[in-house]
Image (cartoon, rainbow, N blue to C red; front, top):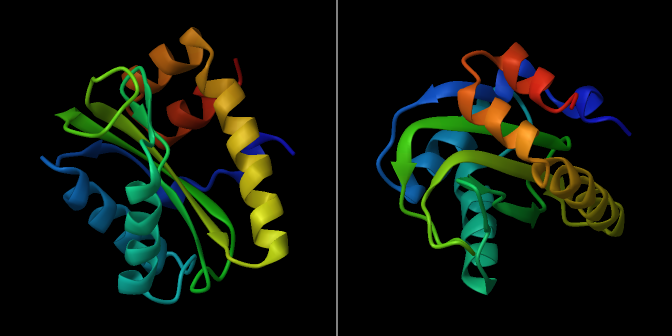
Length: 150
């Protein structure tokens, strides 16, 4: 599985302008609903917040990977939103977040398997300094997708 096969330009945004984690999640969830990845915004957001309570999803370098397995996911997707400024987010390096990589996966056994594969795939790429630099500088969905080609 290649990241370029998973990413959908319709759920990638490089000019998000929010001040809080809650605003960011609300905006991303609405985008997932608009693009038919989920059937219900409120339930999906609740599943994300339930996971957020379990531990930090900020992985450092201004990146967070919030996620939640949910019964309201209609198709697996990875939304990537880049905020104009750093927003407060619980993170392992105590910095806020600019890049949000949100996984939408179902809550079945198959969904759990896809979730682990996506986490492994993205964690490896997001551990690459060049990928992170390119993401932080991306101005278009195409540039976001190209960032992962490193």
